[in-house]
Each structure stands twice: as structure tokens, then as C-alpha cells.
Image (cartoon, rainbow, N blue to C red):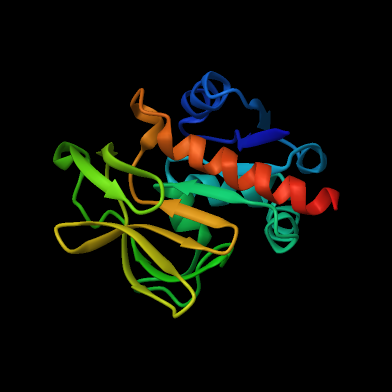
Amino acid sequence: MKIGVLALQGAVSEHIRLLTNSGAEAIEIKRADQLAEVDGLILPGGESTAMRRLIDKYQLFKPLREFGESGKPILGTCAGLILMAKTLSGEQDGHLGFIDMVVERNAFGRQRDSFEATLDVKGVAEKLTAVFIRAPLVKEVGPDVDILSEYNGEIVAVKQGSFLACSFHPELTDDARLHQAFIKMVAERSVLEAH
């Protein structure tokens, strides 16, 4: 089992470290053809507008959509959550549109407003340390979206089918439980595909 981390911009090495420390084989994804090598994918935190420009520049949009439509698991953190949204608040459409949710960018404020919080993430972990940096917020979800965590009554982690997304940066801590839950999702999907 191999998990890729989209390596165009953002917290790539941090995700690789947590995946590797959790026993998964992890590779950086920089080209569309590399997607065929992986069983799951992480869309890391970073700057979503810059990431989208790079996705378009390197002609990754369609291959990423096809990867998601294939049912292979995808985890999006912070900017990755924005990329996975069906709708962005104040804009007509989202980016990849994998999760039926409306997302507001930078909802927790500017860089100087960054903070850490301890969250319970349903089915993943209790007391998970979450790092919020210019974090987005999930404003609404569709009926098929499971809300996994909230912070002060606001949605910060969701799951829909094989897609998992959070507003925060789990990769900026040493707590690998969210990554381990994602590895488990990928492993379960791989077993199903093998049969």
C-alpha cells in the first residue's frame, strides 16, 4: 500500500513523516502519471489559490478528479479541505468538488490569529491536537457528509465516503492518529479492490 502527498506547495514533508512513522509507504506526487502508483492521496495544507494555479499549470485537475471518482481515499488538510469542497462561500463553484460542503476560506482569521486546540474527532481520536493557521471553516454540509469534529460549534472535520477533510493541520504535530485513521481507510479500500 502506497500513499501519495500532492507535492506542489504546502506541508508535504510533514505529511510524509507522519505516514512513514505510521508504517505506510509515502511518496511525493508531482506528476499526473504518479497517481497510478498510489492507493490513497493527501492534499496538504498550504495556500489553496496557489495550489489550484499549480494544479492547473501542471495539468493535474482532471487526473485528480479521476483519482477521486475512482473511489480511492483522499485526505485534505486546511487548503486541501478547500480544494475538496463542492462550494466555496462567496464563489460560484469549488475546486475538485469531492465533498458536499460549503467552505469559507480564512474563517479563523489571519496568520497572527493562528492557534492550537484539542479536539475530539469522531471515529479517529479523542483529545487530538489541532493546529489552525488561517484555517477554513465548513459552513454547511450535505446529507451524506458526516461531521467528525467541531470547534466552538463550527465544523472543522468531515467525511463523505472515501473523502476525509479537516480545517486544521494534523501534520504539524507529532500526533499521527488522523493519519493512522486515513491509512486504515486506504488499507480497507485496497482489500476491497483486491476481491
